[in-house]
Amino acid sequence: MSPVSIFATLVSSANLRYTCSVSFSEATKVIAASGKQFSAPQVCEAAGCKQVTLRAWRRRNGLFPETQTDRRQNHFYSLTDVCIVRAIVVLTHHGLAAEDAIEFAQDQYFGMGLGHYIEEFFLNDGRSIRDSIVGFFMGDGTKPGDRIFDFDSNETVDAADRPKSRLTFLIFGAGEDPLISCLSNPTGAVTFVNLKTIVQHVMDALALVRVG
Image (cartoon, rainbow, N blue to C red; front, side, top):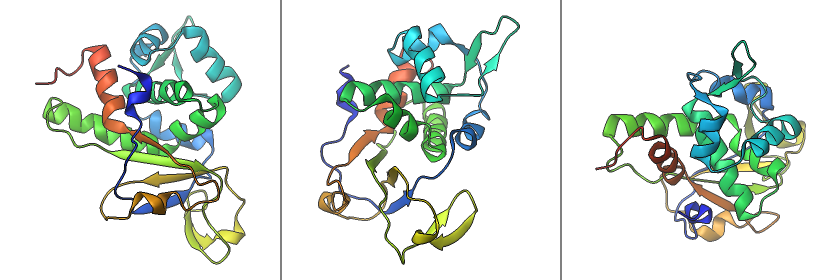
């Protein structure tokens, strides 16, 4: 499977947009709720990267700063973590900088989306699972006067009252907004990822779900 194959070239709907301002430590609280059971070699084999690369992402880019360790300081990861690493592998192969790929993949809502999707896979044995497209663009997608929900303060605030964000996250679901509406942002470019393909790849690699 080509790592670029999970990127959607056509998307028909985008019904929710928010600006990410969540710190890595806050994002990992969601991830840490899953059981840490996979070793670093297992993660790398399933995600398609080398262990030295995973170590570099953790040390230089803040990936999974609070992973569980044993007495020998071996790190263990959850199934959601493995999927996050797979997403980073695909994003960096696609040409994104590791810093940007990790900021997107380690977003707490991306992790929550993966967690829900993994539950669906187990409940349905991998059969007839819907595609789930998420995306992001670099830069702040808001303007002064916009009322947005700020996840750090847990309040709705004016966009001008909080720091500008490096990344705007897009969740695709109901609605029929055309692709061009997603591209009407300051950069004119959006990266799309299919959660289904990421989770399916990891499940197959770990032999956790046999798709019928």
